[in-house]
Image (cartoon, rainbow, N blue to C red; front, side):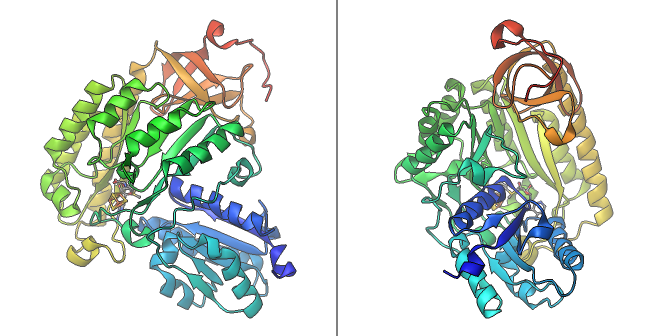
Length: 464
Ligand code: SAM
Ligand code: SF4
């Protein structure tokens, strides 16, 4: 390998979902083995790579703006190379390479990261634009185990939560969604392989594992399903909590819900993406469930897992959605009372079924009006759910002290994933402690530690 190339400095910026965060960890692992150095100051980098998201128009525009911004900041004559990774790479290769103002040097899709050293070399040595956006039916990166160092961002060591992709791709083809086109077909890693990665992470001090997949609960490897995988992961010593994201409502067998109820390491939190509450719109979205089935599932989950926290994703203004149909979404939100909701205006994505079949005909002002109403409703529900926890005792996993903020507060998360703020004390990120919830805001809980359950020795100063 060419020495000049292998000593290059790389600045990697990640957009979008947790899966992209994990993919960036894979990329660090792959390139570090080839002697690339990762830097946190983009002006010191020979190569700037953006790991992109294509899920909504907004994410897409941000990346275009960022590339122009890098080129402007580094100047016309700068030799800095720019590479585009991730979902935008797959569905916008042509556009990205042909846009002369962007001057993109190389492009790698989500299944091509092992080829990055070669793509970079081609761009450096031959000065040609190089790309690989092939989608694989098999690539799961199961032979790459990103270490704690590969996972550290901004030079802070945060050995509390680690993401692990257990499956990749999606076969569902919801009509609004670009993921099946940018990330290809579903494929899963073997349970042994996932457990091996978890063991390594436990050995490095990680306390929480979040299992990831575009459609994580449709995980299947031979006869092993997601319930089996979760159970196996929970047996790894040192791991205190397990979370998962993002599931689809169609894959919640009773066996899995029973396991969640019984297994203390599996957090009692389910992200249950609703998308819409009206049956005609759900059908047009190809979500494969009705309003009634969704409500029944939410009810069953609440009965089987007492105290469970539910979160969701909702899209407003899908093509042809009327005011009355949007009201159906509000009704489901009121009935289920999600603890948290991620709410989006519908955004047309290139190549999707909805883009081909349904004109984006809900006016922007109506989308804005609907999302404003929805956000307001959800804000009240979140606040109510938070207030219900005041006076309770919760087990909290402390997050790393946010050094950059230099505050006198320590963040943590309840089992249900609610943010908890504690005063500084003789504890640190990664500790699992019991607390009394003393107050609630619409976004977080305030708490005091229970001294006799966590060896709490009050100290006025942070002991990080
Ligand atoms: N797999 C998950 C599921 O089944 O719901 C969703 C994952 S998707 C990557 C994240 C969220 O982005 C979706 O749940 C949806 O709410 C939102 N989203 C996807 N495509 C969108 C679009 N075209 N416009 C607006 N929001 C979109
Ligand atoms: Fe997209 Fe999720 Fe539907 Fe798959 S299940 S197509 S990732 S919204």
